[in-house]
Amino acid sequence: MQRKIRDIYATIQHSPARTAWEKGVRACADDLFSDYIKKALGILDIEVRIGKITEADLLRGAPNWNRYSRGGMALVSNMDICRRFCTKAVFKKRMGGLVQPPTGGDWLDLQAKALAEAAQLVVRAVNLRRDET
Image (tube, rainbow, N blue to C red):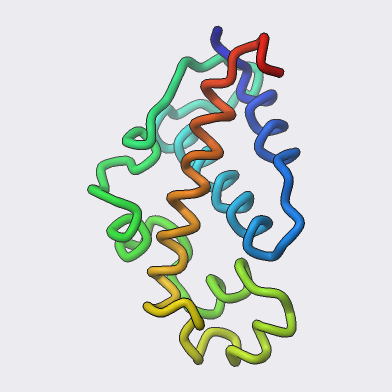
């Protein structure tokens, strides 16, 4: 069953997010879905119904989330990425993104991991059947 864009946005916005990481993933999911609707489909009306989507639809031509992240299709500055996924205390400890994340890799790698999680959130929200709500 096709769902209205408005309902999909609501599903994404109401997904549980207690930690800074989860809130950042939810923000990525919102960005991914918005970019898909506006840029890939060219839809501005949130009352329109759309069909199922896949992770490949959200990647919009990028081969994977690391390339998507590094290709400038999401946040590009370390400071913005750090701010999105860290608490204020960690943001300060990481000097606003000047110090690399403790997880290994760089901020773009961390964002790529979040984008992969966000994509799954979007795919579930869009492909959700009415009897599952």
